[in-house]
Image (cartoon, rainbow, N blue to C red):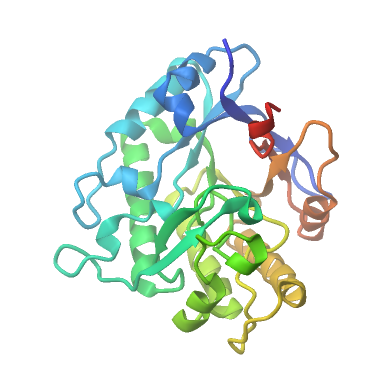
Length: 321
């Protein structure tokens, strides 16, 4: 049997961090492994300690009604994990997973401002895909996301499944994966004509790094409240994860924007660590078998006295690696 899933390795330790917390090998299901049954079969593989349960925000609200959630699929996957005595990592990405009712007019929706991007991951190496999302600093967006987390956390406690959730991914600032990232690319940088002028869209929407810091403080506090007994991990991108825009609203060349984005990443990690003292993990979803771990993630963890999680990536999947 082939394992068409990524493996998250929890938990390497940063300097001074507590040794307690989620540890071991966790399966991470990709969509095709869910469709063809590989994920369910892989749960029985010897040596696996846990599994991620991954559902986009929109998948939890199939009725399309505002803030109305259906947890049937969540419950099914939680039962499968428990049947195999596996710990659970809960992942609810936003970004392309934002429900459509966020943008619909009342009473069918919240009428949040809609930002439309055409994006390609790995700096244009991936396919072009449309991503519609609200400005992540909007109060309507943050309140709705926090309400969803509260409902999920309450449901898990009421069903007794909360005891199986060892760790939760801190999401809310996502594009098309769980990682802490907002769309950034342009066609000129990636040589892909399908991409939109992402920095201009952000600038015109009022993007500023300071607003993203405020969003992270609210998001991290929402996770702390909704999941009071779980560890929380945040997968980061070490470079070019945010629009190349300064706090004056000026679009900068990518190299000139790098110090701004580095400072922003450090600030976001600090904000999350402060909201989740003693139970926050920084993570990198780019562990490659024949390469050392990126020094930047180790430095980030040491600077904030945090443990580290690593997750493999399908970056070389097209090459059969």
